[in-house]
Image (cartoon, rainbow, N blue to C red; front, side):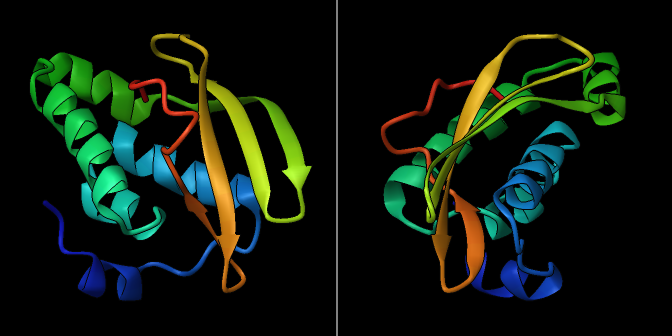
Length: 122
């Protein structure tokens, strides 16, 4: 698993859902899972899902990792469910697959929460 206590201090909190999604997705695309963890709700279910993403990333070739690291994040939709929950529909410029991620506002920070909307791919 990931150590969440120290990495949250290294990254500024995300003041908007879009910024939280961007920082989380950017971390995953670049293989920076400490960064991704800093923008995620810290619970066992979310840690388990992020570990799946990390394993998938680790299984990619170096060329694929490089292509993902250079990919742009394309936001297709920011669906506001209420003042504390957004669903961000996005893709990256490398593989072009549409994905969704849910963000929850907690203590004035926007954090990814895989529960209920996780589709297993970033």
